[in-house]
Image (cartoon, rainbow, N blue to C red; front, side, top):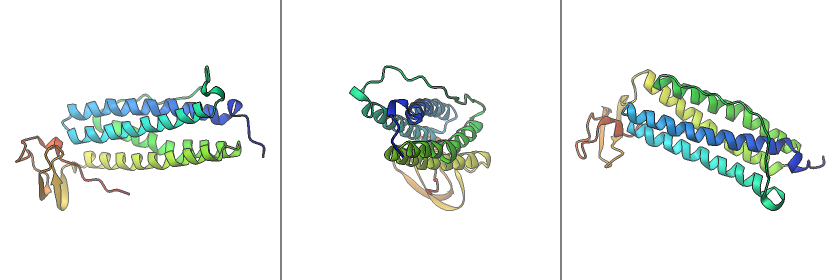
Length: 199
């Protein structure tokens, strides 16, 4: 199959949509990180800021592909249409929304964009969409764990003894429950690192 002209391709439209979406995801995680501080889950704040950083990195990848694949590295304007969910609810519910959004990106949207790119002759761009989808899948699983811990009051409790670590000073203590206040730096429980299972 002959390669489609990049400037006339669906792939360019999908790259622009992906860039915009990743920027919005990055902003949304910044907003949610602020809610974490209000709810006194300071370690979750840093977790959400890391997700925001990931999303902005994805946006930069899409930006670079668009610019570097274009004549003279300039596109005056790209008209595109896309939907984006604007949802805010109680603290815990926001993580559910975000987990579902990440799941849709990883299992439907980016795999579809990858197929279109490959069908249009842009194999490398298709592979990039697939790589981003794997990260979004990890985000979805992490957010699912946060939802489970919040729903079941297991953020700072465990069925067996584990090592709890203060994210501020590094103090560690082995117990079923995290310490309420760090005995070393006196930071409140919200600074204790939350153990997540890495898939």
